[in-house]
Amino acid sequence: MSASADVQTGMTYAIFHGCDKQDEKILLEWLKLTTFSAGHPLLLPSLFAELQLKRYLTLTRENWTRLVKLCADTGQYRKPSQQAQASPPREDAFNYDNTTREILQMYQDTEFLVKDLTKIQNELKQMMGLLDLIRTAAPDTRKDFIARENARIGERLEEIVAEYDALLAECKLITDGASLLTNAVWNLIAQRDNNVNQSIAADSREIAAAARRDSSAMKAIAFLTMFFLPGTFVASFFAMPLLDWDAKNGDDVISHRFWIYWAVVTPLTVLVLMLWGIWYLFTDFLPSQKDLEKTKGE
Image (cartoon, rainbow, N blue to C red; front, top):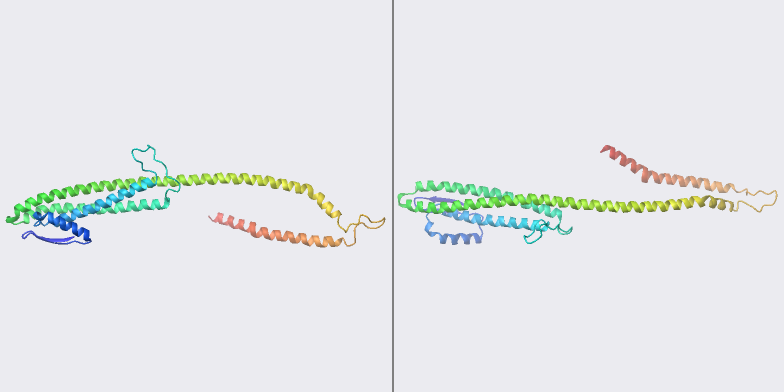
């Protein structure tokens, strides 16, 4: 609001900024109710202070509502008729990240509100200091009117300042509650993470038990394979057509083409071992070396 007043004539000119139609309607209604004080220079500033008080009261109540809702969502709020222990929230009752952001946003909004309330309160105190100056500058014909209205307006300004003190105290409670609620949410997040870690540990134990069972089964399979492998190899080897067990006296049991067996088996074995070595090099050895170098670098 920008205003100028002439104490000699009792005329006051003011421009209100940022007021909507509803604010304009309220100010006009108040002016109709205070026509007996129309000649006082601080009438319009006082009415504007009343309007601002109404706005800040609404903002403070909204922040209170937000705080209570967040407390209820996180399980930190209980009615007097409920049990002494607040019930913990369900895992899916609220989003931890969104709740934390809402709490921080409410805290910041309340801090900005505190700055505005403090600024307005200081301006009201300056207005109260102008009452004596107005009384001194008033002409003799208007001194009684100014003295009477100074007392009336000064008393109301003191009440408004006191109400701003109450709003500042409420904002202090809101910020303290937001700080406590933030700590509670962080504790809930820690509990959730601890539960997740316990669940992961339980799953890991089950996986380890299953791995042990699989390992025992693989050992049994390996044992059976080693048990039957020599006999299987010998039986397969002796059953080859390259060995003639029905040879007559003086004939060779081993065929003269027996070298073909070794000519095929030897390079095939070497090829299989080479392929296995290449596969091991690119899938196990090199990645493990990279991980080791990365660990050393960190």
